[in-house]
Length: 533
Ligand code: GDP
Image (cartoon, rainbow, N blue to C red; front, side):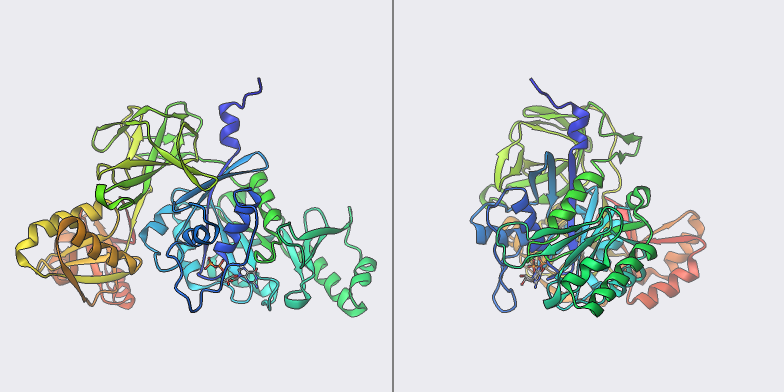
């Protein structure tokens, strides 16, 4: 019988997330990928979300329209004999710290840019996060069927705003109503965009010139002047941009760039073919003791996300673990290194073809969901016995802050318990000012505050209200000299707080304020925007 060996299983896996600014087309690209992976069998138009209220998760939106169950954080499907693990990064209202942390659990990201808008705010932030681990980035420039910015300017913008070198793998011919197709720099073929084909990949390969692009044939399609213009541009592109270099891509120095239109079902398969061929398979991860290679036979993994309240009555929580090494089998015993507790994992779940299924076997790069009742935290490491912890699962400095007020002062104990548990779970960050004990919360997305309000009420029977607080940033502080730290603490006590793990943070009322203070003390004190969980 034909069996696939363990190393091949790893080589044939791709674990990634799609990142973009809202409305650039993440949901549509995801949908087309699910279509290519045969998870869904037709593709439709993502409805305009302008006026109507839409579902909170992008995948819930697909679920709603498709009637399939993908209320999950990860979706697994196969494409050309490869197993794809696509991790969802909430893009809209439920954007949160989780979104940042998901990016630490992938091996590379696909960044979607709206061709008319270029690099937008959310993309900048997400790319900043991927920099922490030097995560490789593949770029897809979407919506070429509409008016688009000049392609060279778009790549200039990506290069300067995101500080990454662009290597076009294909190049658009025209845009908007005169979007003709893409020219593949690699195989020198022109893929013609066919507008009318529904539920099929929307292209025909038009020309195939083994050596060089041919002006004569372009003239058959376009008027003479326009054909010459296109011909010149394509020749220029061949010479202007560097050739693809896999090492630069893997180090995130350069990003391969693809063009297309997700809505027009055009260009996604081209990119996915590249993903399976060139994007990295599950990689090794650092622990506080040593580096763990995916090829090692013992099972290890780390928790990067906890989804709470899946079933309110049972306080059901699913902790999402990325398998780093080994072959996981149903019923396996794994140790939570932080608590020493052994878990018998007979009901771990994963998500395939839109359904939740019990995991019988999982390999490095796969993500499995572990049911628990609050005994697993974000950042926890699971092993078959070894005592080490994966690092690089960070807390990110929050960007929005609120003061918390208790409606009934007698409930203080419950409030503290609730806040500790919620912060351990990664739902919110809790801080206490050192001068006057004011408690304030910090988050990346506003929805996190709503979730805390609801969960404190339902699970801990505590009513709170939020007040605004004049904080714009926090930074974790580290100082080697005890004396200098003491001086600093005396001088800035009103700008200092402790997080829920008693790490010291500096509170800034503006980025200018942070700059002044950090410039003043940069010799002795580091001001960090992340800390290990
Ligand atoms: P998300 O917010 O990033 O998930 O974006 P969506 O996938 O929901 O897309 C936002 C809007 O752009 C929707 O109305 C889509 O139909 C539309 N859209 C997505 N891709 C394309 C495209 O290639 N061309 C055009 N014209 N519209 C697109």
